[in-house]
Length: 508
Ligand code: NAD
Image (tube, rainbow, N blue to C red; front, side):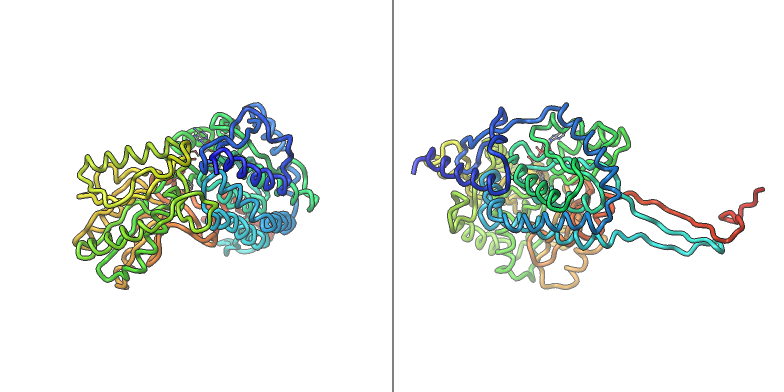
């Protein structure tokens, strides 16, 4: 089949999915081109928003906040419940769009949609649990307590590689918290954004929710600027590169807005002499080569005890050579395309730098299927052994490259592990309980996520997700991440009939 025919067939699937989710055909024309990494060709185009359009959205969302904040939490939860039901009904449609735009294989694309369903379930429960505490007052006849109130308009900016799940993590919680949401998905992932937004619109209408509570911005970083600068946007939750975070954070902080950053990672696993190497092999292969190395939690560094390094690397080399690379819609394919030429070139540049820093390529790194898809970038995931954790290993290259370094003693392994600027996800493979406990302790992994005997990627929504250092420090999704979407009010009620002052202060 010609590449043009392949693109045409994919476009048919995409149009069908968009229509099923309620996106009007009239929305599918404009000056913003949408490409698919599957063939590298343009699918269609949509109309981008201007900064003026976004300011209007902020006006509307700010006005809607005044109504939405008064809707009881459990009723806001009912909207999210309905949204989750609609997402579940359209799981395969949304999966098709994620596959077409991000190039994920079917099970990973649908897995991303499942995360949306899961967070909706979580948020529905949370809508009845926006708990504040009551504390004993030091004064007789007084009650001291805290209440959590809706915060205001939330701006959500997301990355290409997870086009829908991080939006849902933010939005499901923000909505139950009583906040309107304005979402700017990646310029590369607008179709799944339009479909997700259409389903939320339907959920809002089905539940009789007020107008103006959710908005979608189509466009590049320029379109996002009003979200950074407008004081009415109380919280900006931004997912993407550390470069983006460095631009966004000072702008929002400059007006004392809140920000929640989910930035790049440089995730490692330590493999100790007691590790079950077959189990480690599977955990590493999925985390390092899955999603063509384009997850924030992709495993990029392997820190292996020198006594097991040769054996493990050889097992990995053999496993990598069995990975099927190709159209992510074909059954049996495990590794889809890289997002674009720039991503591929970044990978090649990193491999060259690694070699010049003493690295030895074990396997991979070659572009494949170029004759079939001249405009798409399919690559063999690479493993490269490094004599030390040199400069290139300390950077996040958003591509399937696994750097392997060895260690002699466990403290050295921890030092290597924490010796990079990023702090998102981490893992240890070991059968030694003391090593596992140290890894999870204050002197162990310095990351937001630390796992034992599983890989670095594929987090569940129940835990708080995010990382430290250059990863930005934000936490979203499960646990008590809901609190960032609310403001805390501390209240003291005096029913004593007298006016004792705190700390025993005397006045009139
Ligand atoms: P990117 O930083 O290029 O873009 C991310 C989003 O930010 C896009 O919507 C983009 O339009 C917007 N943006 C970029 N610069 C901006 C600016 N100055 N002002 C306002 N908006 C701006 O990232 P990407 O290439 O789409 O995604 C890959 C990166 O995202 C990797 O570094 C990856 O690790 C990271 N990521 C992190 C997480 C996480 O949860 N920690 C999740 C997914 C991706």
